[in-house]
Image (tube, rainbow over all chains, first blue to last red; front, side, top):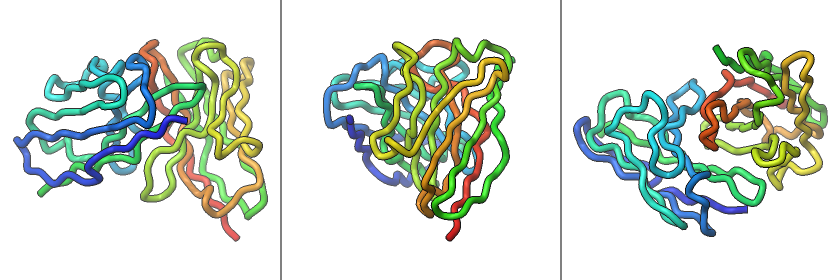
Amino acid sequence: EIVLTQSPGTLSLSPGERATVSCRASQRVVSSYFAWYQQKPGQAPRVLIYAASRRATGIPDRFSGSGSGTDFTLTISRLEPEDFAVYYCQQYGSSAWTFGQGTKVELK
Amino acid sequence: QLQLVQSGAEVRKVGASVKVSCKVSGKNLIDLSIQWVRQAPGKGLEWVGGFDPGDGETIYAQQFQGRVTVTLDTSAHTGYMELTSLRPEDTAVYFCATDFTGIDCFDLWGQGTMVTVSS
């Protein structure tokens, strides 16, 4: 199975700052099957980005995704108070879905 | 409006089995590729198994092979995930999820079902 490794594990930032989360795959990933999720405590995850770079319905344009092959990035251009949460990357390949271990974006 | 509504919390002993349900409203169950994801307390997301988005066959994460079965009851509009030979480390919230809009990811989630395994 394809292993996804996110970095950093925790990002300590202030509102208004830029957040960059990386996700590296152990093998090449099909971009159409690569996504980013946000999860807040006590809630189910919510998809932010699908097909590596397309924003899901209702997602603000401060969220963007980029990358291909084995290296992908989620960028939040200017953090809003509601963006402090945990972010996960995900891919599908070889009849299996896998998630990264998560990156916590916390208030500095 | 499409919703995934899961069954309530469960408590089981080590070695027992648990079956979690996910009722679909708003779309034909057969048109959805229901997946199951779990999250242990304070930990990340872990895909358990589901239906292949390509051919609809059941697919399972390697670490659960032989212990998990996902099924559908189309007449009841409900998907199920059964996990056997439970261990304390199976204590987690189990979510069902699906690709509702055809964007090849999980854009609709159930509310989660807490499964506690005690010795």
